[in-house]
Image (cartoon, rainbow, N blue to C red; front, side):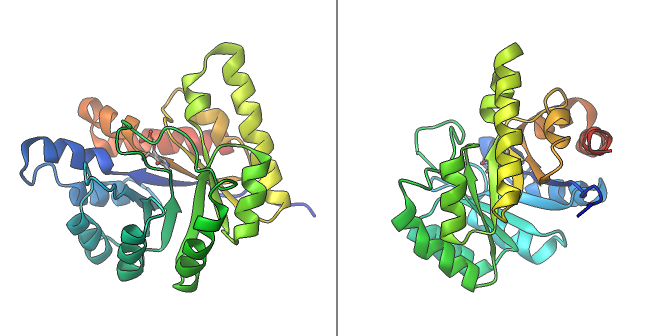
Length: 246
Ligand code: PXP
């Protein structure tokens, strides 16, 4: 069956607006304001990671994002009873289950869906039963994809960190892994997203992978906003994505 090009969505991760706010303990800069700017600049969704230690996004941010922002919220969270209860209370449009270690600076690798299958199964089911679209943040690996499907998660988000960090031939190999995993995801009926570490320099080859339909990007955009403004940074990122997809 011939298929037209699929649209590519951008989810803007606003965690690090909250990081900056929390550095002084006040209310400025407000991640909600960033979400409003993202909406006006053409983002398709807002992504926020509520960590166990609340180092950036906090519970009241989630409540406010649900109440005041029209864009769908993709809540990134660890697969813990505490986070499950929060997700079920707020019912965001989407939840992305991520691995989380207290000491890490950022999410270092994908979720081990294979090893954590028994633990993940009821959480994926409860979230799905509540009408929340569940995705698993995994490395581009066939066994992880197969397990996501077995668990009944409709979506996977491929971890692009290794691709972004690699250089030269190693980066090309990581891109190949992403492309192969995205193609495989489609053959087993999974919607495929990608994210982590993407920048103006690294986004285009990932955006060109036709079976990836959403990118989640945060740290680079918030950092770039210092120099060019958040609106301009998001518009430029969207233009690079659209160009690569076309
Ligand atoms: N996707 C997931 C699942 C993540 O955990 C993160 C980081 O919080 C991102 C995307 C965005 O990564 P970055 O902030 O490096 O763009």
